[in-house]
Length: 408
Ligand code: PMT
Image (cartoon, rainbow, N blue to C red; front, side, top):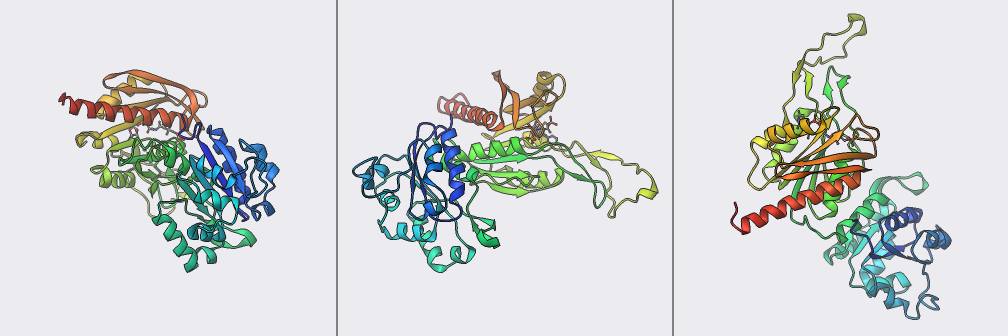
């Protein structure tokens, strides 16, 4: 279940061109089961119509401090009833008013009258975002415990390019999940790998596979939404899930280096990456020429990263592998579970329709050394990730219980 399910979320929209993205944020929050109460400032209504947001939110947009048809005392009622307030986009003016407690409109009153957590998602031109007054205001808000979803760099209004673009709706919703999540993984340090490794043949060609990284990114996003501190070692350039540190690698050797240098400090490692089993034994430092004829490429095994982690696993660490199989799914995955000393393996039959590589969906069986297999029918990769993270939490809880009762 999403941590947003049943939560009352006030979505404050202020006057910037990024206001159009608030529509998508609203839709995603509602899809996650949240009750969305939208507030628009006067300036926001220059960019998006109230009808659009009202149609998508859980109730009509509120804009008025006075003569508000929804409640006679909107300046306190809306904020008091909120589980979370998200301001997206937050303009420089909105940020300054919030810092000063200047309650001139319904949104600022709501921000003052709430005890709920607040997420501010700034969006403005680079010069404004970097102006010392905005920098100071943001610092004060952060110090007060306001959550900030940092703007991205990219194309801004008027064709400018730079820092200040509103974060993606996906990152903003992920931040909401993190803030409202039960925090079951708070204080837990996690490494997740994602994507397929690319092993060079010469200076331009590689041996690759079809992994898109979607399943690994979904695991990382889900773990972060439950409060884990996540490092994602990735070969692909998907947008970083909110709050997740991404380390980019290309080859199996680079992935091994990035993971092994952090492994001793990790409480949980999830290897969702499709690591090449073989790589060219020698790499030409120039482009192999067509007129020299087809090259004889001699392959050698890559390091088995997961097996190495299993052999040196510190006490208490939870080690999770994935198994991409095309036949004998359970027998092959079971053998990997045992051979690599794993606590959990997520087996997917990648020959089945809509399963595994590059799809948005997956169907898996979860195998553990000491529990019955659990099957997850075809589902969105994020839903699969949810069950994987639930299982990791269960493994950690049962270990903590064993330690308390002296079983280990
Ligand atoms: O990225 P997507 O497009 O979303 O697709 C998802 C996925 C199909 C890649 C994912 O669900 C998956 O199955 N990942 C594991 C792919 C794989 O390499 O499986 P394997 O059975 O070959 O390897 C078993 C385990 O050992 C894996 O956890 C793998 O990361 C690890 N391994 C494998 C080889 C190697 N040299 N080092 C490793 O650590």
